Image (cartoon, rainbow over all chains, first blue to last red; front, side, top):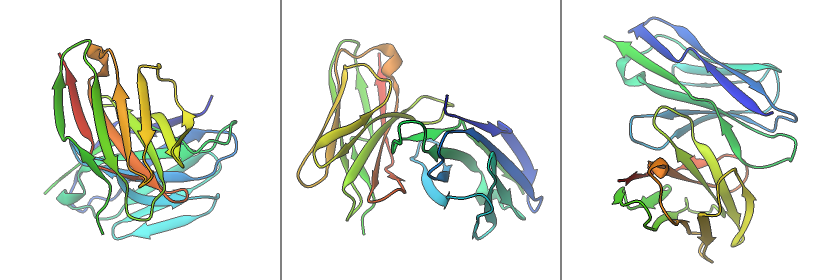
Length: 112
Length: 110
């Protein structure tokens, strides 16, 4: 069964304290891994798409990487405004669908 | 360039009632997907519309139905509301593979 698992569930960081969020996936025929940021009560905001193992994408303090089994979202020197839930999703699977399968997210809090 | 818009923002309904949610896609996008997000969970895929047809469907009962109009906007209809239908309903539009989400409609069923 296609599945996405994110860890940790919650992460508290001091401002400037770098860390990584993990997204493990099981899907046959991966056709994209997506990272989103979601603020409370709002819709997910698109961050990155990764398609193949070894691929990396960067945006400001965020860097996403992909292997054949997992993806990492590295946050370098985070600021309080980076506090949000980060969602990982995959597209692919046995029936070659377009639907996104999401994990439950990592809730990040950055304290000044 | 307006992103994905949804209406209404919030909605309160009673068990057994019916509800219609609306979505306008990002300019240039032709595909609309709907997701349900319960508190503390990731979004769950309901269905996707392309060229005014339902192209794919997730594990949701027939009480959930939808429509796409010639201008690519879409509606989600839910009949015979249950308490468990309370959630944030998200619309996402896409042209190729990257889906962009709207702000969502918060539905509360009492």
